Amino acid sequence: MKITDTLDAAILRILQEDGRISTVDLAERLKLSPTATSERLKRLTREGYVIGYRARLDPEKLDLGLLVFIEVLLDKTTAAVFDRFADGVRRVPEILECHMVAGGFDYLLKVRVRDMAAYRRFLGGVMVDLPGVKETRTYAVMEQIKDDAPLPVR
Image (cartoon, rainbow, N blue to C red; front, side, top):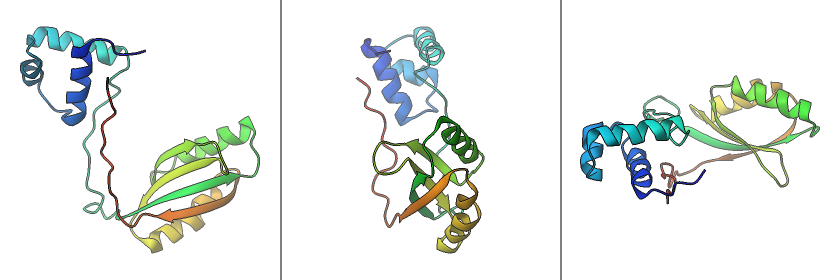
């Protein structure tokens, strides 16, 4: 589904900047009535353009300062192995993101833990127990340059 209405696109851009904006303030920025704005927002949510709202938390304040990316190569690439691996990943809170990728490995994971010692425990106690894992490669993030980019809404 493609956004063709410039007002809908503007609503989505504004919501990505400030998901807590009031309907009245959003309407003011759009130069629409609050009722019309509310109806558009409800429709965008109903149609699946807006999939949720959440607060962004500071990982340092939560003692989760180490961010790592992990390449995962599975022992087999069958539907059953993919399903078991995905089910296992969904149960691990430290795994923030998991993406099946094309290329020299099967999945790319984004993981947050306290520090390198915690990561070592995670690797030896969690990763090795995930179904189908044959091999992993870890990339520790030294500096986060950009992590809050909004989607380009046109």
